[in-house]
Length: 294
Ligand code: GRG
Image (cartoon, rainbow, N blue to C red; front, side):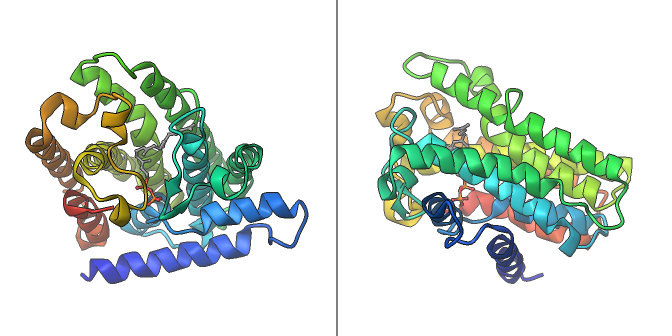
């Protein structure tokens, strides 16, 4: 299986759908629509929407009906990056290789672009999925709200802020990661499995895969922050150290952090053991995390 080709094709599908589904720049309020498009269409790996599609494909689901939900996940992710970059949070100038939204526009516009993306995401996630029991879609939508909000990403971001400038244990750090980054990644594979029509066993397996994949992703993000290259990553390296933030690298060292990431990848692959080659894109994706450079 050609993973690079698979990822490129799915990325194109997602980007084409985003182009179609987003309000055009010429429609008022133009400045808000321009800021939204600037952040959303300015690069990014599209990991979360691709995970939705790959999980759905692993359970025999079709792609086109799921594109609005997959795009909703990218909208939520992009809003979180815009807000995370604001002066009140990480105060970053560079994102996806370009000036952050508040640098390219202004702070108030960036706040509103994030707010608008979050709410637009739920408009997209509520697009009826053809042929699917609406109760299943409602479950996926409620799960998305939980994983993006207090009990997921936003809650994790708060824990992360509270952990700055103090020493925390590895289990505490893991808890931050599970919420801040892991919840949305797990939500992607869970939603794909549900909306793709998976059996309860398949849904459980893909949820477990998403959990392990989310942790592997965050650990490799910590490693990149420590040893990565700002130019290649398109965002500023060394932020954790600068802000005196605990990370897998500060708690374990880079070598042990790599070991932990590899162990999470093994766990994710183990979760996929009931699946045939239909899950090969998911297998390839999580293996690829170990040598990612951005
Ligand atoms: C502000 C509510 C709120 C939440 C922010 C996700 C997050 C929570 C902050 C982002 C900070 C950060 C660098 C987290 C580490 C993991 C992460 C989300 C990295 C960026 O995601 P990628 O690598 O980015 O998927 P691209 O640009 O490829 O989409």
